[in-house]
Length: 285
Image 1: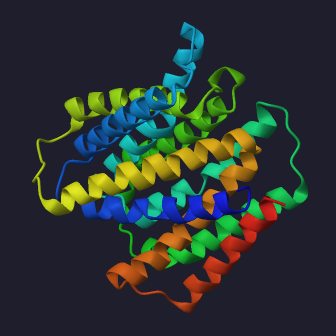
Image 2: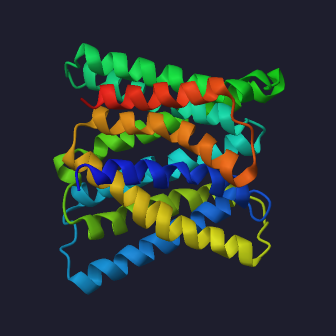
């Protein structure tokens, strides 16, 4: 499980870029995300009830669970999807997202007083360099108007939210049964995204079969599968080693886009893919 879980997580998480691209033509992203996490929270409530799992007790523990879900899902996905809706290219968003392991390492060192090995720092740097090479063609085609400060800050803030939420996930107060904890966390995410949808969303939901299939995939695979794996990995591993896995997501998403959408994949991008995977392996040693 400790070997298969990281590989399965990378594969599942990388498909999120494809879902985000597909949903854009069918529904408002805020309303889609709110519906997604409302469904996920209901699913985990049913799982926890069926298994008679113990629920978090005490206002502080419940509050931390709600905070973790709001940060890791709501404030992470909402602003990042908003930034892309405002014109930020997905490649730039993916590159900003690749900063998350570096944010995690800096917080671990500067705030938590951890000491990271030279191989960890080298692996993070190598992985980020590989991600940059993979995304280089998209970065070169980006116009200056797509990189306005409010949009970039919203994107960077969403990644910082994921980083802080991951740290909260490691808190002893946020531990407990994974099913009941996930139910509470997804309630927090759904509440934040509903507020964003009401404030910033547009009444766009075409109700097509394709949209419902995207929603089903996002609920069952991305959230019940990928997000649960991420929480499990955070609980059973060191935060920086787990965050390093995210460096492999943009390169794998580029390969999937080449396979599904027929996007080009150059020799430089393939080299970047190899470097990113090597960086992840080095950082997780």
